[in-house]
Amino acid sequence: MVTKSLDAKLARILQDPNCEDFLLADAKDADMAGGMAAPGKSPEHHAKEGRFRSLDDYRNIIRQNVREGLIDIMLMSASTNEVLTIRERIFDQSHVTPAIRANDTTDIWLAQGGQYTTQPARPFRTAEIDHGMCGKLECAPEERQRGADLGLFSVTYNNDIHLDSAMLESYKTFRQEAETKGFRHFLEIFPPNAPQAPISDLGRFINDNIARTLAGVAGKGRPLFLKVPYQGPAAMEQLVSYDSQLVVGILGGSSGTTFDAFHQLWEAKKYGARVALYGRMINNSEHQSSFIEHLRHLADGLITDPAEAVRSYHGALEREKIAPYRSLEEDLGSSLRQSAYGGTTQKQSGGVKASTKDSESPDFSTMSQQEKLDWNRRRLDRTLGP
Image 1 (tube, rainbow, N blue to C red):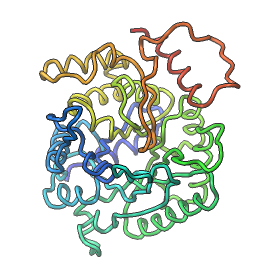
Image 2 (spheres, helix red, strand yellow; image 1 turned 90 degrees about the horizontal axis):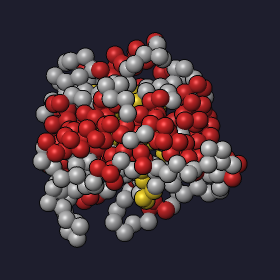
Image 3 (cartoon, rainbow, N blue to C red; image 1 turned 90 degrees about the vertical axis):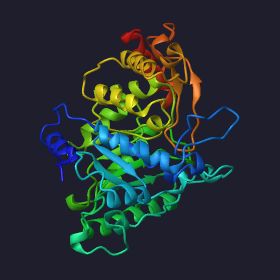
Image 4 (cartoon, rainbow, N blue to C red; image 1 turned 135 degrees about the horizontal axis):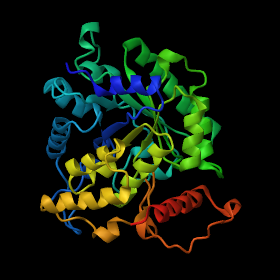
């Protein structure tokens, strides 16, 4: 089996936090969340026709993305992992590491007409570790390398002691089983989907809960890295500086403009993130291969300006004769996206065309965390220019 880039890059990052290595994951785990819509829009999709890709089409795209090798990790459901990793062996001669979503808290239950995302998330696990590792309920020791030995475990804290302690207990149970079976994991901390009391500083709330979650966890039970919502430079710097042995990654969140995706990766990397796990952003792009290629260029520093990456991506779409969802001007703007699965995307002024009338010295004491993030993003956009 080819040496996986994940292990080599993580080793270099932990040895030298200033090295240039950056992990990029294609989080193709959405076939657990959105039901019929989860595989993404079909090329024949029209506004009034709910046409989506089939699961077979969806898996074909995964095969293609693995072959192209621009990512380090492919995150899948346990059922897709069984087909592609265990049966087809598509990762055997690839440097890409397969991983499964090891649990599915109720805030990613997105059934049409459902109300799950409006209710506080509850811990839940569909997947079995053994199914991910060997495709059956009980693996013999020699069978545990047949499938994926890496998984994503997610928790959502909603500022309620009973709900949040249940999340912690669920994670503890998973960690114990994973350690005994040689199953590695990375930890995702979703933003609150239905907070039970107001949270004045969401970035600090998430960071404090990360510290609390991992404070009592010894080395063998710790996650390889984190997957967190990007809450701006200050929150990222605070988390990165807290523990040099904690590799911090960002989740993509809901789809917005192409500038949103590229700018978020660029800025998060600037302030200390070492991993980007983009699911919906990749899945809903016009051309996944070209989109991932440009994420890779930003992650590796081959492109240093998000706006330049957007223009280059539109050029790639033109060469592929693929119509973009938005004009170049629209795609160079920003939208107010949500990290939580149940969130929506709203149009927002910003991007490289942002107004220069924003105050250079706003009253931060009157601004919410999101408003502070938006102000800082617009400031950086003005500095970068078109």
